[in-house]
Image 1: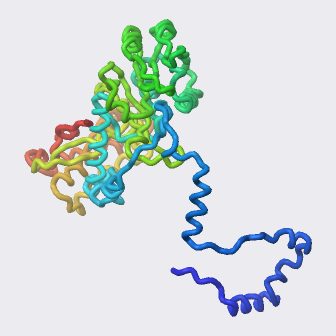
Image 2: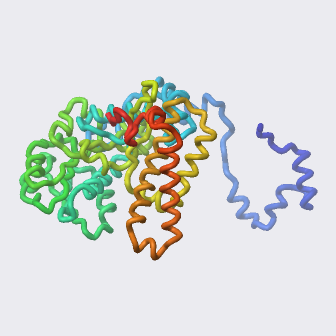
Length: 426
């Protein structure tokens, strides 16, 4: 709709409606001395070209990204982004209105995330990468929490280099502030700006959970990770590297080659504009043996019954699954699967992707029902809950094992064990 200003006749009609003769009467209650002081002495209007020149002259007094140098370590950098980038990523093949949780209609998004995970694995030298986190600071903090999930309860001491980005250090301290069992110690840096390896070697012990260093650090110094990794390995602590500029990893020895357990960082320089300091995004990679503790989402590759390549979200975090089970009645997934069977018109691999998550959920529900069946306390305290779970077990068994011959099930579910064939993160 076009914007059309009020005409003089419109203004007269509105003034008559409210019972006054002029607009000035609306301000009669304001003293005249104040009204005179409120007048603004504005110059006459300018043409568009004149306005552009005037604003360009004002902006020339500012420090711009193209006029100043950026030092390694800060985390926000000026890189040239070709126009083709925005054109490609905005195409419907890659960007859809559907979430990655609907693989049958979001293959472009899932494939883009899968290729991104591959790139991060190549840059960091790690085995797996998730689909990204909020920013570099939260990625560093999430890496500490991931180490906490992996390490035993006797290891709750975190050693963090003071040469790490101060914002990252602040976020990590905030994450750990209310965890009573955690201890955060900082390691100083020497005159060269590198982490003091001697102090680190003295402080790391059998109670140390992880060591966090920048690679490169906030001062742009490239840390020598060999002695740091040796100190960590000798005491069972995990090494976490934080990289503020992932493009630098194209020249440096990747963290994985140094033996790092977790490699995270800020990914803004990978095609994201500066936008006055953010937002960017965080990348997160680790060794494959820690995949069950990896935060965020992971895109995996699979094939359908006809051998065609496809992508799905896989290995959802255990915390998310547990929360979903607590919020959802136990018989809902089975009912949802039955409704889906009546209306789904997907192609074969898409149908397999849809059913795969439902089947995994029902398997978990079946195991839950078996546990409750073996628990006499549950039968005595909550007979209704017990009967509900038992019914769910029976219905799940009927749907997945009696509704179709076994040979058809193997065709309908290409990953018969609940895990996609050839699933990989990178």
